[in-house]
Amino acid sequence: MDVESIKGKIDELLVKLPEPAQAKLAEIEKSTGQPKSLIAGGGAVFATLLTLFLCPAQLVFSAVGVGYPMYASMKMLAEDTTEDAAMWITYWCLFTSFKIVMGPLDFVLGFLPFYFYLKLALLVWLFSPTTKGAAIVYDKVVKPYVFPLLVGSKSD
Image (cartoon, rainbow, N blue to C red; front, top):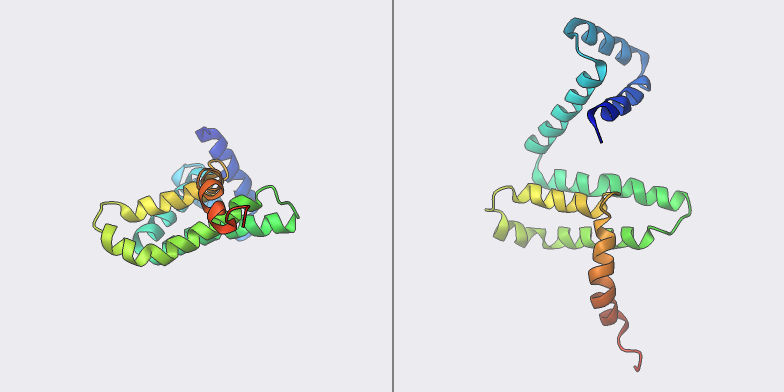
């Protein structure tokens, strides 16, 4: 993904803004000489960094861990498709497990530099549509190791 395609996507989003916001953005563009997409993108990056650094860690972890996955899960249900169902169920089980063990883990591993950001990166890896980490966990861990424990042996 190159810079021009990102600027194009930002421009597409800016067209959908209400008229007063577009007028203010045009005024800022005229006074600074910078394109609207650069101003809006810089503002979004600044707001994201501000949120990451100033909000409590648990709140950011919950917001990141629930925001997009909830949207994608609801979209999957609304479209009545089940191709990603196993991935999303695995993701929600992993997210719940993380939330349960987070207290002791934070106490033990909290001294590591950037531990919080590593946890966020793991969450994003799990739910990202490009990496589909939860599907990888499902195929490599849940199917071969967890399902046999839940189902038991076939001879029972």
